[in-house]
Amino acid sequence: MILYATCCNEDFFKGLIQFMISGPVIAYIVKGNNAKDILSGVVGFREPSRVQVGTIRSFGTNIRYNLAHSSRTEEDFLREVRVFFSESELYDLGISINKKRE
Image (cartoon, rainbow, N blue to C red):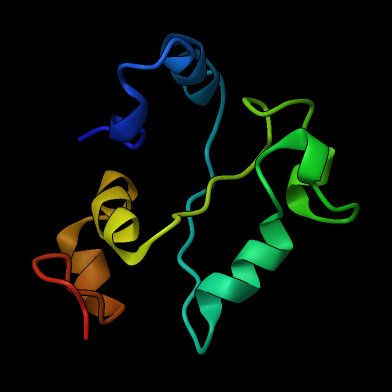
């Protein structure tokens, strides 16, 4: 399973993978009311020209080195979360990866 499977045919993919494996990763799941919208505000835009000062990505150097990943959709989340967490860890958090949550 590839975290950035949707980008595998893009010109930047090889460099992205090199960056992703260049150091440690901290994976976390944010849960709660409006968690996706709140996290998006904390993380900020991925494009450097649109990043807001004070967001996590405002400390990045460019679009590849932007310091944070955040799933865009629930479908992306359900695919991507399996890269970092086991099914039993997700179950303990009340997250079912076998079907879309309702």
